Length: 203
Image 1 (cartoon, rainbow, N blue to C red):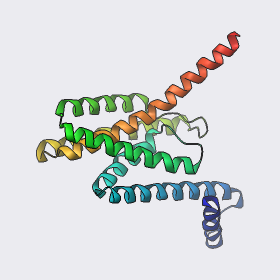
Image 2: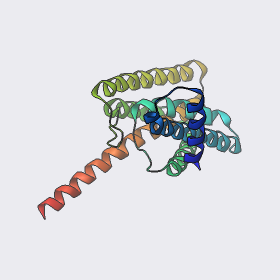
Image 3: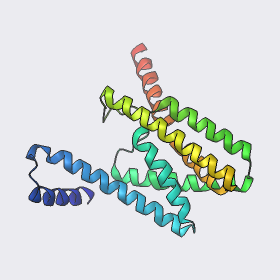
Image 4: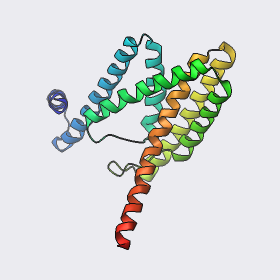
């Protein structure tokens, strides 16, 4: 269904614009990715509405998507799996933010935020073997990802310090933790594959 909609959009685009035919698959892939991301964002906002707090959904999307766009990390194999992963991640972020908010432990939240920052800055951007980047883009994404991470974390800390808004801090911490976990997963998978490969070679 998603591919069908993407193809129809690209068909209309090619009718009104003079694009080379050989670029059609690239535009279809871009349309699929855009539609998938849009559906994921809408579903997150709908879930946050059902949970009674649209601000959590907006905060999650702002932190999660803006950094993940450049930092990379775990990617599902299908668009449907991606849709489920996004919503599951948001629900986990919601639960963690509620736990942190209920505990109201400043030191724990700040510790998690610092650890998340270290992981993101250390690993970004995670290389994707299915969609490799040039070394130039890799370096550019690394710089942008680090800047975004530091700016957003500083903004969250300023809001917390001057507005005493612990709820905002807990949502941000949970969102950054989700980004960090999504970056760790491919690293674990890569090491496991290397270990399995070495084990088979030794046999």
